[in-house]
Amino acid sequence: MVEDSPRRESGSERLKSNPYPGRGIVLGLDATGRYALQIYWITARSAGSRNRILEIDGEDVRTQPFDAADRSDDPNIWYRAIARAGDRHVVSNGIQTDTIVEHLSGSGSFESALLTHLYENDAPNYTDRISGLIDLSGARPEARLSKIVHSVAGAPVHAFYVYQQLTPGVGYCLHTYAGDGNPIPAFDADPYDIELPGTPEEAAAAIWDDLLPTDKRVAIALKAIDIQTKQTITLKVTNQLT
Image (tube, rainbow, N blue to C red; front, side, top):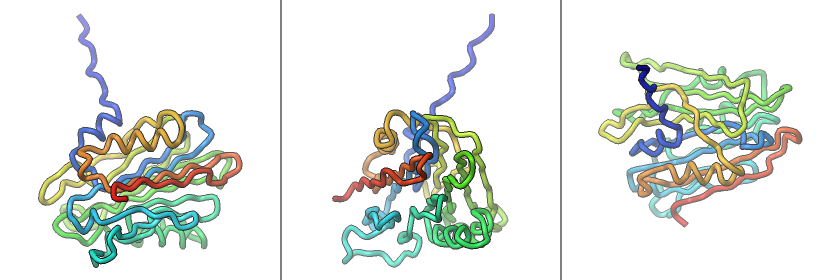
C-alpha cells in the first residue's frame, strides 16, 4: 500500500501560522498575468515601531510617524520603502532602497548596491535587510529578492534570488522573522511561493488578512505595474492606525 504524501502547506497558511513575520515583501504577477505586483508590509511589537503609517509620495512610499510627538529616533524605522528607477521598481525594509535606486540610475546593479550594506544594527536581533526588484526593462518581467543576514561568526551573508519566469497568480514571499521571541528568530529560509488571488487589490487584502495576530499589524502597501505600458496603475496603502 502506497502512503499518501503529506499535503504541502500553502504560502498563505505558512504566513498565517507565523506569530511575528516582521517586515515582508511579496513580488509576482496578478492572476491575469497583466500586472506585476509589489506588496510590502510592516508588523511590529514595540510602541515606537507601531507608531507608524505608510504614506504615498508621488511614486514613492515612505514610513512616517502616526503621532509625530512620539516619533522614535531609531534610524531603522524611517525610510523610503518603495521607489522607482526607470522601468525598475524597488522595495525594501530600510535605507538600502536609496542605495539601490542610486546604483540602478547609474552604472550599478541591484546586487552591487546591496553588497555595500550590512544587516540592521539592532543587536541582539540583527534584523535581516530584505529587498526586492521588479525589472520591466527587458523582454519579459523579472523579479529579484535579496536578504542580508547575520552569520554565527558575525559577518554579513548576502543571498540573492532571481525569478526569470513569473507565473500569473503566484508571488514570492520573503520576511524578516520566523516567529516571536527574545531575541527574535531570523527567517532562516529561502523565499516561498504565496497565492495572489483575484485583482491586485484582492491579492494585497488576502496577505493583510494573513498577518496574524492582528494586534501586530502596522501597514501594507500595494504597487501594481502594467507590464505592457510599464506604468504604475495602482499605488495604495492600508494603515492600522488611521
